[in-house]
Image (cartoon, rainbow, N blue to C red; front, side):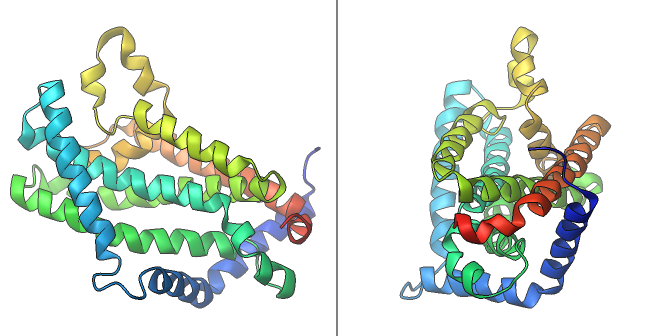
Length: 268
């Protein structure tokens, strides 16, 4: 495929800036999609929060008993982990379809390409805000372990979203060309759920099996958000890895966008 020229990369950067400046458009489109999805529902997006709360309670009690964990420690870990994972996985999965479902706009209106990725991310951040109510309730019930590190979860969420976004940019572009990719990505995300420390922690895999956590980049993304909420300061290595992934990933995503942006209208 070759290396993208500087002009192509420059176009991608300009496309990114234009998409950011068009924030009114992608936030409006995201709101419209949420309202259409729950147009005749009394509770609307709160149904997502209710279903998430049921899942957290069920998995927390069942797996806590299976692993022999104290509920006051295990349930907050599972609650935070699941809410974070849903945000990350849905951004990636819906990123696969970002260009495909917006084909009519792309063919008929000249808009920045990354605008449709921002639309998917915004929509899922709104849903995340609803689901985060569960985390707040859990922290109220079981107590905040450390107020001094609690605030660190905010930059953790930012890094998580930035990494999810560059992955969504790549898979969205590739899915427009290869229509089987969304199913492949969905299957891979299901596998990643079970090998990422969401229902378990790194401390539960001591010894020779700890490499499952050490070599999994997603475990560091989960930790920089979850550990501050659980009262533990994430190690410096986690921050370095997450920042490094975000920088390298965005360079790669912008390079691909700049090289293949003209082909998107023909692919979709």
